[in-house]
Amino acid sequence: MYEVYTLIPADRLTDEDKAFIQARFFDINPKIVARFPRYQEIADSRDSWASWETQTWRDLQVLFNLAWTDPDWLAQPPLDDLVARGRNFSEGDKATVLAVHRRLVEQVIPLHRRLQDEGRIEITFTPFYHPILPLLLDTNLAREATPDLPLPPRFTYGVDAIAQVEKGIAFYEATFGRRPAGMWPAEGAVAQEIVGIVAGAGVQWMASDEEVLARSLGQAGFSRDAREIVRTPAVLYRPYRVTSRNGEVYVIFRDKALSDKVGFTYSGMSGTAAAQDFVRRLRLIRDELRAQGAEGPFLVSVILDGENAWEHYDNDGKAFLHTMYRLLEEAQAEGVIVTTTPLRVHRPLLRPPPA
Image 1 (cartoon, rainbow, N blue to C red):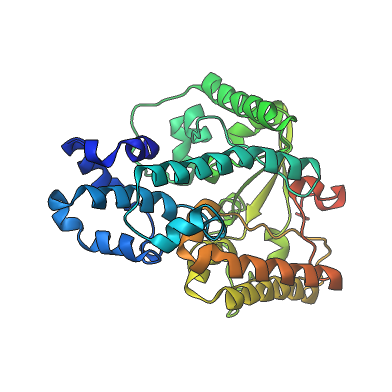
Image 2: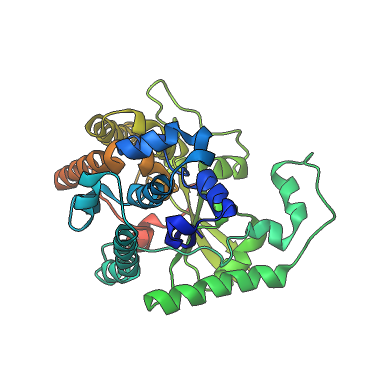
């Protein structure tokens, strides 16, 4: 949709087109808008959009698309020239930006497939149309978590829930050349009743949130000490085996506090300081496990909507990510922390904790 409105020549925009562009071509973090002086200038004059000249509309079309481009690509030809010029763009400039976008998009799946085939990453899938699987199976399952929740008339379509998982797997297999091992349920929503569906589809593991684990264990949550370290780390930081008549699935639970720091908090710090804090916390978790005499190994899962986080960081979080990976490599060389994926976790780790 955004590309469609970008492609319309600025001198042919209708009032309806302009209303859409004015409403939606600022759908980006203000921190990023501020990187482009002309973009900020247009944003500051947004209330008077009815009087904008054709060149202003064209500049906005180009700048919106430039702003959604990673800074590394903006520093390379042909986009570096457009960034340096900053304004008075032509219709040809729009075509240049969109051509780069298409080229980059075309590289995404081949790159990730290659990294997967090299064993460097693991790619998960989600049920095809991103349904909340337990609610698709039976809306009354919502009361398992919130007994007093007002609900609409009961909706239960188990066949559709099965199809959503199967379609997700089929799409993954067609895209990446193999069946997926792991699933991220939409919004991390799980229920005992979906285990049979997931296991029956051959999925080996899925992931959810620490609060789901706490409630499943009859706890209000995981308490943390003054350092924000979980007081019972041996309970949180390991996979659980969940069984059904159709088989079993391992479930891992994310450290919500640590994940939220990456997603929401660290963007307000320098990238280096944030990365140092992240790895320091991992080391503290390890220290606490050792102090409690817990037998490992253990798995700390950090899970977040990564596409939503980086625009809030300076320079798309590059300082944070580069420093974090360097520190993790150093910690791995020390034998303190091992970076892994759930599929690569050895069988001894995939066992339930003692009762």
